[in-house]
Image (cartoon, rainbow, N blue to C red; front, side, top):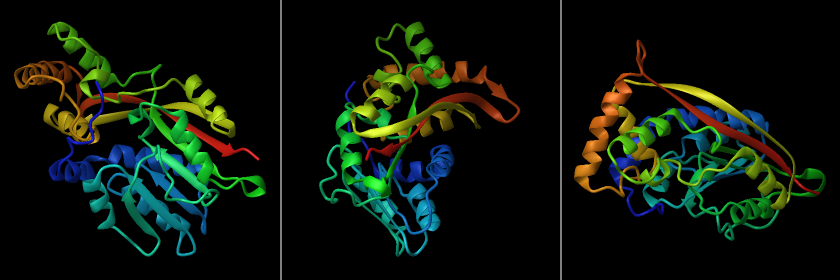
Length: 270
């Protein structure tokens, strides 16, 4: 399944702004790993609706700056409703950062973005190009779904798909489509011009009130791609079976699901 950027809508963008606490919270952990400091210039690639970008702007303070880029205009529009003196967003994509001069950023980060990019080396080379080198070398930070440890929801979705006789995997149903392994990401970072990459997989436990909340989260997070390759009748069959399977994971706090994310931090080479 090819990811489409044309399926997003104002409703999906607004929903994502409301339900993206998970991405926001693990993004804050990434910013801690990067040790973002006051006065630094930061590029948020795939900034979405700007929640994390605004958080980073507060961290770098008035002497720093955060610029966000995202290929989805409706999400950029929402991000700019949060615009401050040191945060702004524009339409752009990871594959082409030519609007920015080489060596013009201290930090570049991609939070829950890399697993939507079909090709990794080009975007990482672009990130390296815009980062400072030499004694003031910049840093890159990435969170991405881990191919070697699929999200629990994807395992459930694959089981539902198989039980209904539908072809494909969770990825073809629009869920974190272009995942990489930790080893592959480490190698690609080095090939792109980064050194001393540090990677680890962290696990998170989520709780959802109901199946509809799970579906809404994945639909908004995938900018409309979740289940979009299915005929409407098949999509409804999947949702009905998902409801039964997800209820088996209900805990007192809600439907319990685990996610596993690669956290990667590396320095631009000298």
